[in-house]
Image 1 (tube, rainbow, N blue to C red):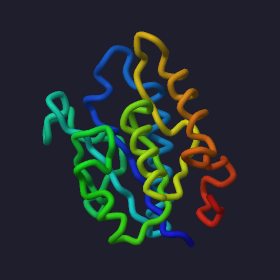
Image 2 (image 1 turned 120 degrees about the vertical axis):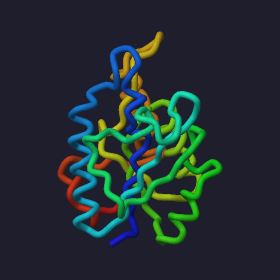
Image 3 (image 1 turned 30 degrees about the vertical axis):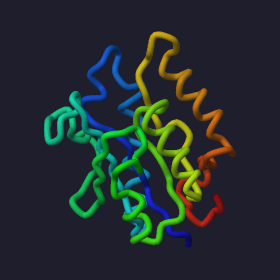
Length: 176
């Protein structure tokens, strides 16, 4: 079995307070919790990334992870101040320490922190995967959230990551 970790990016209260809110947040959180449960059953690491800035002030309510997430003390937590979860953080060192070669991603916002982190991880040589539909974002002035997600999934597919097919979602033995 490969050395895998689940990376959950910025699923924080403050990201859901603008406009119409994060696209399909409730079903996304349910599926993210299913991925968390699977990783825990396999004794594989779960890593939560939390953004902090003037809007997501560390330790504030907006900075906290969504209460619906199954986050536990034994999980790993990385704070960041940039869209790239590797930039000025200990993420790379943690992954090296844990001998991780394969990363599965989920989180928010698709076109910012999720996209940037996936591309950086790919560039660093990690094998990257995602279950389709497990990133979310907000509508913007140009596109609605669903189109943003579809657009990025199209770019990522077989370039920056491999999508986990529904029949593979509960199997880590498949090759990514």
